[in-house]
Amino acid sequence: KVLIPSEERDLNEKEEMLLQCIRKMIVFIQQLYENLKIRLLRIKEDQMKVDIAKMRKIQIDYEITWNASKGDIVETHLNTLIELKKYVQEKLHKYEEFQEKLLSLSKVLH
Image (cartoon, rainbow, N blue to C red):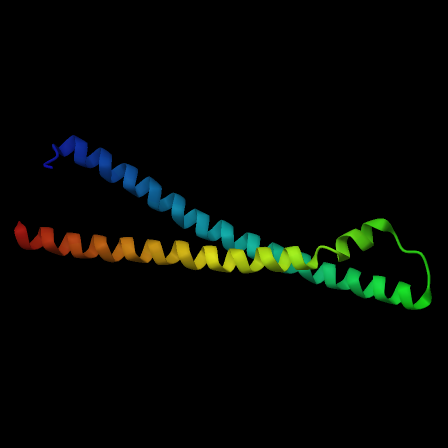
């Protein structure tokens, strides 16, 4: 399909907006990953507190035991985020490669 210049410009603007959104998503995923790593450290600290409390046979706050029980879930989320980031980066890289090939082809044709 041949586009008129205004259609092509609109299409290019939409594409650029989408690319910016995807790049921001990668940053968001990375920041969420870092936050979950910090949360996992706190969970491990709470797990140690729970273990110590069990050995000493003392009562511990429900909040600490609840937090300590979430370690597996957070680890699953961390692994999911790693895979998601790889997937998004791979798709972005493929798109950028495609654009480079397309631009080089258009240079040859003009």
